[in-house]
Image (cartoon, rainbow, N blue to C red; front, side, top):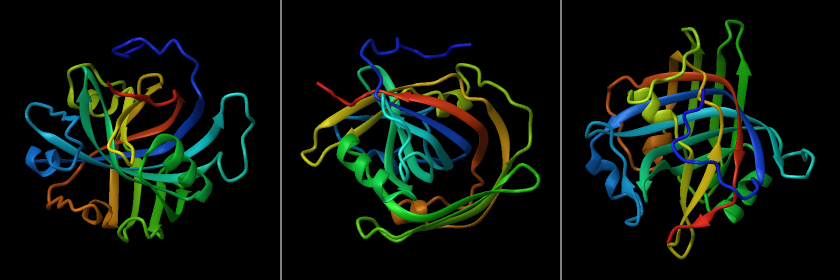
Length: 242
């Protein structure tokens, strides 16, 4: 079952990763709350007129560059993203406000090579007896406002693949990211993977200031929650958008 909306790049991929024990926690926001926060060269992507902001904790594993074996400190670590959805040239993708990671090497490499706003944090992602995850993130990087996240989350349904046209598909089946460098230039990074093996999730978010640290107010509405146990991913080098 392939759902990729455009062909895989013909040039070689440069990195492999595996995303594990991932939670999508999505909140609806008014488009005006997000539109001014993305580069003018990108268009905020909407689902039925609604914008969405996501907090996404997970674990990285198997992080390797093409032709290079896994390296200590770079191949496995927790990560937590704050993201929304944008489009350009007919290619809908992901735009990140922050990416917390518990690997100083990975943070600096991703900032340099992919122009992404990675920051260092003290983090843990521990398995729970019921198949869930206990997750803690405490940001410790002066390049971003202080922030923290603590939650327990777990899958509560069978695995399913989201159908095209549904909100779950629109939120998750994205095959590129967009980044901006220090000079304001926009880049697209292609990614490829099988369709997301989603499960409905349940989460107890004990505390979180990840969105608020970036200037967003989530309000009291409960988030839309999905879980994915494991997804291998291939990544291509950035290309500048023309």
